[in-house]
Image 1 (cartoon, helix red, strand yellow):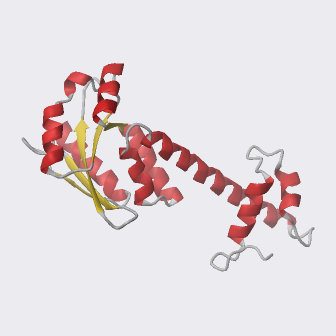
Image 2 (image 1 turned 135 degrees about the vertical axis):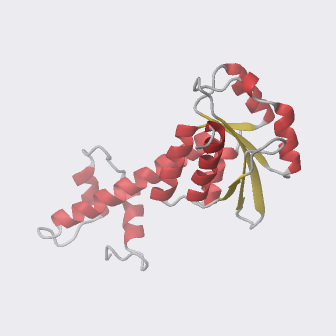
Length: 210
């Protein structure tokens, strides 16, 4: 019962709230679409404005963006960052322009994937806020997500291997596991296994006893 634009903006705000941000849909003439706030590592409140672009064609072009309006909204809300969310972005013009103006271009799929990974991997708001940083924020966040995913895969693999082998072997060292797991798809390094052992044997977790 709502226009596509309003529904899109409301759902953008909902996704940011799902990740733990303070996010609200504003909308309307003369206002930004969504305001997102969080605290950085020093406890300072950081503000970003998000412009949602719902397009029947599925792609956003340079002509769909009013830099005057965005700059006005940024100043009005004393925002530190600007992001534009759409199904896709067409052409180098909009990408070069956004990089110059330091507007983050985020596809709806990227935003949804980040939200899912933020929950599964326990990313902090400071981690997720990398998506607002131009030009390399999204790639840095993607690298962080892949690193945490690999760490989780290794932890899972180590625990499962211990469960399988503990009845036949009194103990397993990181070197033992290195040889057992080196031909798996994950193929963890000895250093990664040592780090995993240290994590799993901490008092807070206590899965392993060294």
